[in-house]
Length: 437
Image 1 (cartoon, rainbow, N blue to C red):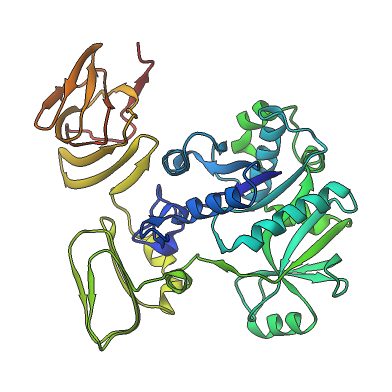
Image 2 (spheres, rainbow, N blue to C red):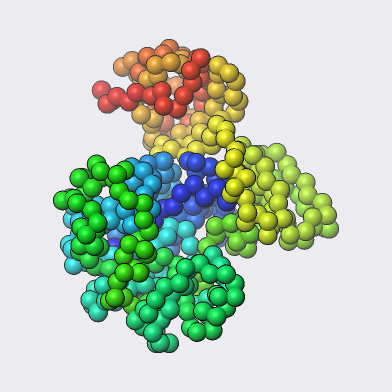
């Protein structure tokens, strides 16, 4: 079975844990049985593998998300990289071309597309297999998952089926409605449109050719930034006559806001936090390492990270985005394919960062034009390569690299260091990569 996971944008509704690099699906906030925490994408990927270990999983993601995906899922998952954001139709066309031209998937094979971050259980992934099987039959060009609504939501679009059968022809789609309209839709048997659907690979590529002139994945990738921004629903689903919907009545939640996310948390506090006995329905997520004390609060979420601090009524937390859009600052935390970094201090001509390299990983071999760097190893063992010279390093070792110097560090064990960047022009774009000789 071919599964495509659509990895959305920055998810600023979960600020301050999410930022322009760290999207909501990569936040490790969901508790596992062993007491550790996993992200939404780790949970979904684990669930797919538990239901169908042989499923081929490909993630459609932005460039900024690739490092986080590699960090959390490893190198085995396929990634279709979007050069820029162009909405869901271009993204699905690009990943479909990637499956055919890079992965070698036959045009007659079924593909299931779904969001990367739903909060669901095993029955959802069994439903994905049924969607795939139904698409393979060829009775319809598109097969949608219609989710049985639990309340008259104004956040989701609605699918109007022809009848109440388990598999029905789709009569029409309704955009996100006001509450009274949603109530009417539900009374008439409407289903939520959760953005989950299946098709035979060749079908979407044929639809793409009607709008885009391209021969293969590589040409499409090269012209991607010129493509029209348009949703898959508008470009394809709402124009298609041969379309079916399959009903799904299992658990399905979109953890897109603090309000919905806290409903899925198994405990009230993640990180250092104390709630006195006068608090009720209060959740705290604290990444700072500093203690948070909450007293006499009700229906409140508190979140603290290196990016900032949020204290909000849970209902009001759904309206955070326009306020966060006005905040501009240095990204303070990010995951990389080799580990992660956290900014500790920002000055006019210096930046101090704590870097963690995972065991067996290394940075790119690179140089900087406008800044010097100083590394101080604080734990772990490995070796550096500086202008071609290799040297073992251990806690307490200090390595200095002047501007223009080529350098990298390789971790034998988990390795932590403090990196101080010094210069009048410190920029993330000031980086030249080289092949490791």
